[in-house]
Image 1: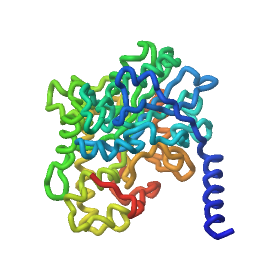
Image 2: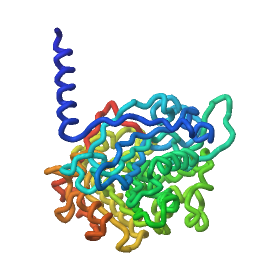
Image 3: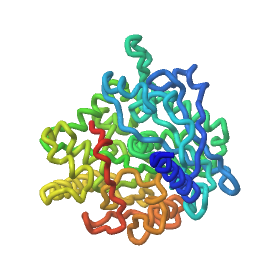
Image 4: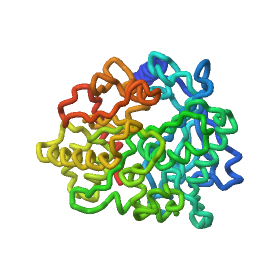
Length: 398
């Protein structure tokens, strides 16, 4: 047997050890009934989710978490996603690993381990806001995210969520944005007696200029809203005040959300640094390439620019106000999505603010044990960070 075979055995052994300690696999559920409603992925396939059922005292508690994966802002970029897992349930793996916020072990997830934990797969490209009836036969693209949202929630309500005692709508990245945009709607679909709160992990994307002074992300969001006809499905409390495309940004949409909301975000969000501050189009010579892969590679000028981004991020957060129903865990890490992985959610070496892990801060906030609104000191002050280091071969940019 060659060395390659033993190498694969070692990888497999490591994965099994990881799953034994931190996670487990959960099967996919396809919502076939959604197809008749036109609630389909970009390619017309049924939406899907993964559900690990609640047990014991958590049997009537529901955590609905939305997967992330960016957006597609025109026919070209949506076609590029159409035959991937971000555009088709046919391309989704049949099982995914649950850990962190999804863990079913009290030592890894003390407040939510026995809840019904659902991960909703993301396949519409517009944070579940689109609804275009017409389908161009030339592309066969379906822009139906808002319909998917309702079909998934209706399916879960029918499977027991209609009697929920406690419920959380959460999400990571584009899914974190979904949890903000659909927060009050989620609340309205549950019984008045249900305790409902929302959690946005790495979903607080800010409206700021790139390195060249161009409104890069604003242009992309405007195209997303136009392509998917999202305006009618964005919070009316926002679209009645500002242009609908701006309501894709949490700093405008979240101001008027009535449901308690927790913002978990790195102040130096790695996706935002890579795609909002320093996208490829704003850095044609790749001066920022190495810095974006690993913050330790950034020179003093780049760090200064990133410190400026942090201040803009904190300014965009201020519009949420200081209501005790708002939760906030803003650490000074180079990271993106910190609730889904055990290492950042709850472990001996997990990130902390005021000596609290993310899991403890969110649990205390949800159960009203104590409020949590903390903002970290500037980089590089926080030694508890798990800063992301990216593979040069896997570096997608908008």
